Image (cartoon, rainbow, N blue to C red; front, side):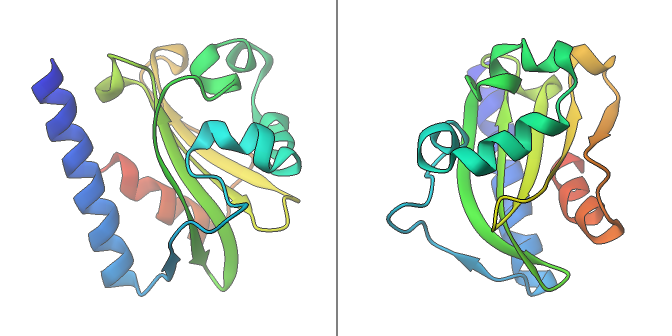
Amino acid sequence: MAIRYLRHALGVGLLVAGSFLCAGISVQAASPGMPDYPWDLRQKMPVHYRAYLKILPARLKRTAWFGRFDGTGMPVERVAVDSKVYFAGGICKPHECADNYLTFLVEADGSRAVAMVKATETGGQIVELGHPTTAERQFMAKEFQD
């Protein structure tokens, strides 16, 4: 199981890195005050965290790895999608990452968030949260490609 997770995490990481290079999306390293991981949003950027919570249905808010980002996360990065700056991140359910994953974008000013999730709670289907634009959808969908 650990090897499967590592293969998945490495594959997702390579996919994300490759998509940034191919699509010309700028990525900046974490800086002071910027969250390192999704769970850091709660304390370091509460406005951004609240924007994320607004798009979650009540049943997902009550699930720890969704609502509190209490899971296995990828580092949060600053990205540009369709000329807008976002904080992008991803998190999965501990020990069940392959089938339970969420990726999100929060606008840099914290005004809006969107996400895509595939989980047991969504019947194994990829579900969009927060009405993503076409460009946002395409960016996040790359996280779910094998």
